[in-house]
Image 1 (cartoon, helix red, strand yellow):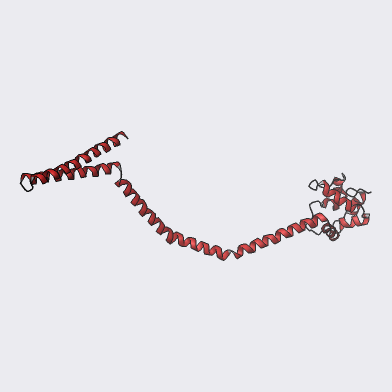
Image 2 (image 1 turned 120 degrees about the horizontal axis):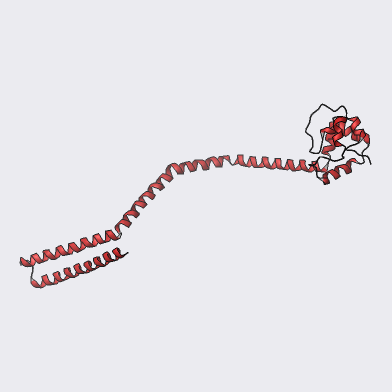
Length: 220
């Protein structure tokens, strides 16, 4: 078997490379066809390092049965080289994968374009919500927060003590008015005693409640 990658035939037959330029596979080295001076760097018989040993072995197994003329033709004729390249299983697999990815990308792009009207509609709905429904909801929330503050203020310890004190003062005033009526003979004794006793009992109940609440508040 001949040494294809560093052979003398290769060095002598490639002194006039083609001027055409076209994309080359990862393992194609232009230095193989640039003349004797540059081909000396390839005499080690190694393929470029980015080609795996398995791929290199597969390519060599295909090339080993080719004649010298066929190998020279591959190195000098880029059309022949391209035909050979695309006949390799590795290249065919990569091309198939690339084609599948291209088709899938186009499919996803078409799906996204098909959803554009729905996206526009949802965007418009969001704008409406922000400008109208959201404003209404915010206003309602502010109203509820104000109500909450009023309720908390109404049932705060200080407010309860203040209202309880007002209730005590009111009962005390009613007691004084009732007493004034009794002094003026505007009410009989039995009615006065019954009402006055009831009012004073209510006053002392509220006074005790006020004292207990005030003491509890001060301790807390």
